[in-house]
Image 1 (cartoon, rainbow, N blue to C red):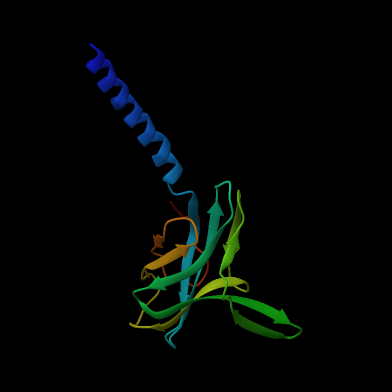
Image 2 (cartoon, rainbow, N blue to C red):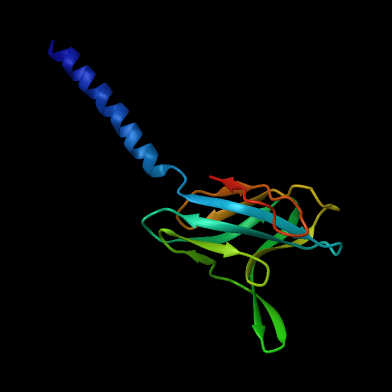
Length: 153
């Protein structure tokens, strides 16, 4: 009798622990409205909205793509009449319970040395690497302008 109660308790404990810890490990960074712009010169940009539903800050550290030789985090800034693009070395902070938009004229991922001729409508696989969250792979479609809302968890 004691053995059966112990086994039942251990099974119930294991099941509840799995439920509790797996919910804590689930993706709490959500990527929405992602899209890409490519140029004939072999470069391009990726834009998106990063939503952090966690109770702690996170940071987009870097990104990679099998379609580009290099992916860099950039920010466009305006200095008087001159627009500059700067490389963001320390990533992009995504505050807890908040979001950050990567959009034209601001933060974006710069695709450098795209290794094939991409056309409008083609998908580009991009993996986002975060400080705390697991990596997330998105497949933005090459567009001229932002598409309608799309979500990826």
